[in-house]
Image (cartoon, rainbow, N blue to C red; front, side):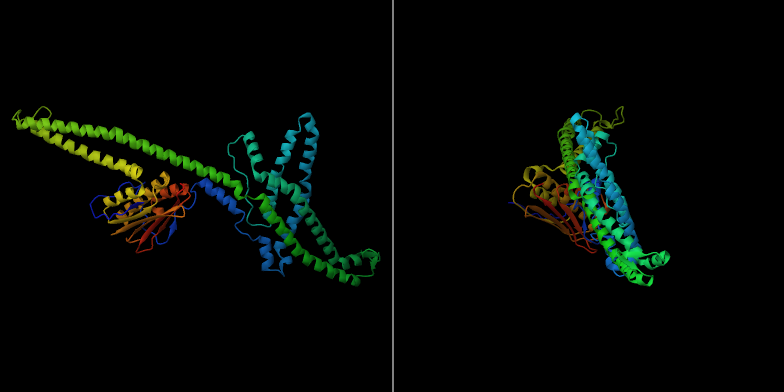
Length: 499
């Protein structure tokens, strides 16, 4: 078991290895989820487009009908329904004619090899029809149905054509144009005709009076003697108008729901985009990690070794000078041409340079450990966190019970999350004790860092936690900060061990 426990007293050494700038995340009062999603702007836009069509499951017309069922036929919403149904009736019956004609022409010309472009035009004919239907829906829906197609800025015509033919939304729009729109348009046309007939019945007494003494038959074979005898037809017309208002609302609701289903975006439309964005971000993270390892090797094998050689050279020079001075050689009180007070003064300068070289070497070693500690690579997360705890100025209790080694990205993310939390606890919280607790449960690493500081965390105030949140999001995990005023502050990391 990779269990590590350590309690570090105040050694005067600061925590090392924190990622990014120190973030003053100890200044808010509520729990904040920092990295629960893929924090990429394109991914966010794609996810927003998927959910935009379903922001409200209630259709606006149906909501208005339920709110005022008795008065609805006399409201503006009813007039909008009728305007939408009348326009949709005409367009719904006309729009299928174009793809049908192109299909017949394309099949006829396919025998001579020139029908393929026409058949491609048939496949794409649903695009303008769908765009027109989405625009027409604005008559009755305040929330527009988003365009389900990917934006292709700068793409050429062949690339646009290939992309549109591969999108499922293109075929859904074609199905709406050919299969759904005509029956709905016929229903709308019939309902509009019923509305006009009901309006005619309402004014039937005036019609009978205006045409008298001509015979008027509102029902075939039954003449209406006079205006008073037409009053029952007026009542029927008013009832037809009233009921037609409700029927129009229900038919409009069917239009809207089918349009949302077929003409709006779905999860599968943007799922591939989100997946590819996630993969691209993972590749960028891997490239960044590889570049960081290269810098670590260069510092370890290059600059660090040169500083070691410089320290040794200065030590040898100091040894030679000290022997020369001790033997009484040279004029210890005389100054040379460079203003150095003889061999004794040179010895002081060499010792000072040697001390500065040692200090630079220690700082460089600390930097290399911060880039990627060797103990993390060799011994795993528990040992690396225990080592950080021993160097921390605040006593830290580490309780990590892990079933062996975890995937490299998981260990790296967890390590830098702990070091960032410890750094912030030492610099900003005024804590006197910190606890690091971690377990693997149901295939997920659950890691929690708790300090007894003053609380009030603000994760948005610094860049360190945001960078960690981006890394956690790539691993499909989440990073949460809970910090009420007065403390304690808890940072919780949950990440799948699959990496």
